[in-house]
View 1 (cartoon, helix red, strand yellow):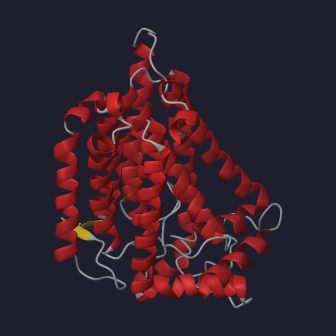
View 2 (spheres, helix red, strand yellow; view 1 turned 135 degrees about the vertical axis):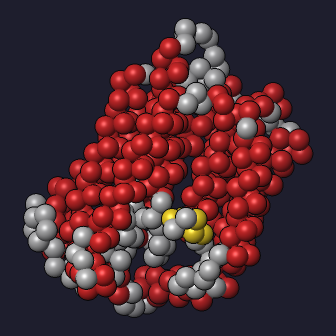
Length: 380
């Protein structure tokens, strides 16, 4: 387990350092034009990175069992923060998603996502003896998922809201909730999310543009088109660090949501595959930590954190390659994504602590995630 903890730490650190390099090269032009300082955005990102590394180290020393006892007040706080955001957050780019405290701007959705993962892990362990009970097990958990994701969806923050639903329902399935309960609830949530997405103009335009490009051969939006040009320009080995042309205002948000395209241009196909490999290593290490944890709370918490990072990376890369509609989600640990990197690093710190704490425990016979409820039983 200690080796897994080190793997997670150094793999995350590698992604963060790579992100620093790409953000430096991708943001220099827009920084020079907008702030008269080519290092302005990089310096801002560097401060957040230093805070993120500090947070990751701190959380790696906090015993993860503590979160189980405070998960209820934490989720109440998260919901309250989301309500406050909905009522008082200033509208930026058509959405009220950000709050500012002492000059630091952050998205409460990032906090709510991590807290919801903690709370679901605690509830799944607490109710482990009657997880097949729809009213007493599934409904209380599902209510927290609906409330949290619903408040995020109507900000509007469609992509974050839908991914939080996907992460939550996957955790519940892995934790032992019946498949038919998951299926029926996910179907209703997908329909509801789709309706909300079509209500707001910016998300509707993204979906319609993506649909039109597939069905009618229509043109892709500017960001995706330029991202594909950027990826194609990189070839096999890339044009080299700092030699990107697309970051010269050709590709909007080159240092943020579409940073994978700049990465692909500078490092080529080989570099892009290497980055995907680093995410894969992080995912496998996280899953192994979850499997080897000796309590259900630790297992599910490790799984939830690992799966959330993996699915966000997958969606971001899928958007940059034109496979998914534009979402506005950052690439974990690499994008210039405000304070999201801090909360992601807090999750990594918790994951590392799960590995360290379980390495110290004497090995005992415990129910593995797949032992107590087989997949066959879940489908019955």
